[in-house]
Length: 381
Ligand code: HEC
Ligand code: HEC
Ligand code: HEC
Ligand code: HEC
Ligand code: HEC
Ligand code: HEC
Ligand code: HEC
Image (cartoon, rainbow, N blue to C red; front, side):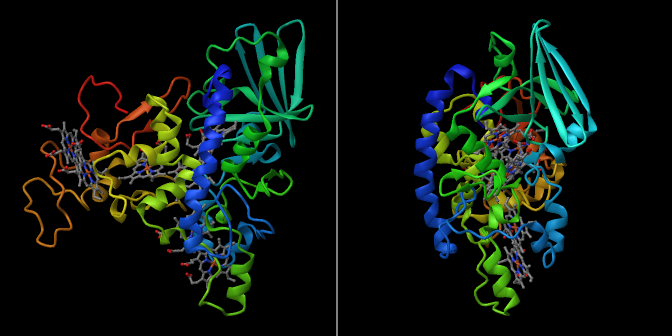
């Protein structure tokens, strides 16, 4: 995300990203339109005339998906401040960083963000809360016609405010600068496109129309025609996109439209541990990855309708779908041909998918570059 980039490096980074994103859109359109020909749709972009119906309508026929998906961090990747659980649980948040004191005060549906240096102060109502705080919850406010990203974020581990990731080293000169970073229209557009559904229409940001978070229709496309078809008894053409129809590589690109695709990261030349956040890229670099093998697709290990599993043993069967167990002879069917581990029989991911903390992230990301990790080695990229 762009929040991870320091102030000075934003413009270059952003240009590269935008070139990237547009070329990716062309590439990915093929895989999606081949499977969903009715719409020129992307998870980050609504097609012209798109008719979204909202999760409540899906719930009437798909109650189990809705019941669990609603609780996932993806579903809650964006909240209107009036509905923000973290701010309501912490009606007063304060932190002092250098000479600035930050305060977020929540009363009813309104949260006021104040920054003071003891002499002057700056106060503004917050509009939006981005993220569930596992890595951080960052606030976005609209001030004299521009979206700003807050210089402080809420962190789950400390349950309080600290510098937003990527802001270490910034030296604001006054309270207004200390409050946050002005985003360009393109950048604000991108934030909402990945953290909500239906925000971008005809390449324009329409915050009044967006549904916060990655909703059902964020991954399945606008649903009005599907509901109408089902109600009319037409089960032949369901008029809804099922990403389960994509092969492993196209699915990586699909999830990568927000998590960043392999091509995007490669072209951005992002180097170093920062790229641990880009799972499609790291996974794609593993020797385990085969673009046509469903046993290594995002869906082999993740159910997008449920929160991520954090018990390491859950993933063992996923690895053992390809890898032999120690002492086991290869199967004649050749389904499991990858070598056995000479070291251990379970909790594979604890050694082969190590976790890394990014500076200022307060969160450990899981490296999807599956490999033998040698003690003391530098982060490979
Ligand atoms: C009136 C009932 C109804 C509503 C409302 C409804 N669906 Fe469905 N949906 C169905 C039926 C019936 C099927 C076909 C049988 C099945 O897969 O369960 C289906 C299938 C699907 C599939 C699988 C398609 C495939 O090609 O395999 C997806 C994805 C889906 N629905 C998503 C949604 C989403 C998202 C919403 C809300 C926008 C929604 N549905 C609303 C009844 C409904
Ligand atoms: C429209 C953008 C978008 C798409 C498409 C998308 N994601 Fe996400 N995903 C996000 C955002 C944003 C978050 C961060 C949510 C947060 O913590 O606030 C996230 C978080 C996650 C998490 C961590 C959630 C947890 O439970 O801790 C997983 C796992 C994940 N996504 C997997 C996937 C997979 C698999 C796909 C493809 C099937 C996918 N995502 C497609 C935007 C997206
Ligand atoms: C290309 C899509 C994309 C864009 C653009 C984007 N994000 Fe994200 N963001 C994600 C995904 C995916 C995640 C989850 C994985 C991760 O943390 O890297 C995420 C994570 C986050 C988190 C941490 C969530 C948590 O639970 O800890 C915050 C906060 C956040 N984004 C805020 C923003 C803000 C503010 C902007 C705009 C300045 C922005 N993002 C732009 C896709 C995006
Ligand atoms: C992050 C992306 C994402 C979101 C959000 C999402 N889905 Fe899905 N959905 C998928 C993928 C990927 C599959 C294919 C799963 C598979 O084949 O294993 C799928 C499959 C389905 C199916 C077909 C069921 C099946 O077993 O094949 C239905 C129905 C469905 N989703 C409904 C919903 C509803 C309702 C919501 C909202 C509560 C929702 N989805 C939200 C990605 C998503
Ligand atoms: C072989 C299994 C496997 C595959 C395939 C896989 N993941 Fe993961 N993923 C994991 C594990 C293990 C975790 C860490 C769970 C935990 O302990 O929190 C994880 C965590 C995540 C997270 C949470 C953030 C983090 O870094 O911990 C996101 C987002 C995510 N995966 C996205 C994806 C996407 C997108 C794909 C497809 C490109 C994918 N994963 C494929 C095993 C897998
Ligand atoms: C789709 C099948 C598949 C899945 C699923 C899979 N792997 Fe692999 N893995 C392979 C193949 C094929 C190789 C390469 C073997 C070779 O070159 O001899 C490999 C190589 C490896 C290596 C050696 C890498 C190196 O750089 O030398 C490790 C370690 C490994 N896998 C661990 C895992 C773990 C742990 C999991 C589960 C999280 C997993 N694999 C899931 C197919 C898979
Ligand atoms: C305690 C840490 C640990 C756990 C847990 C673990 N491994 Fe390993 N694994 C290693 C180490 C260390 C090596 C390198 C051994 C060597 O080079 O002598 C290795 C090597 C491998 C290799 C490369 C073998 C080859 O012949 O190239 C594969 C594949 C592998 N592990 C898969 C797995 C799978 C699958 C699991 C879970 C069933 C697993 N590992 C669990 C530490 C672990």
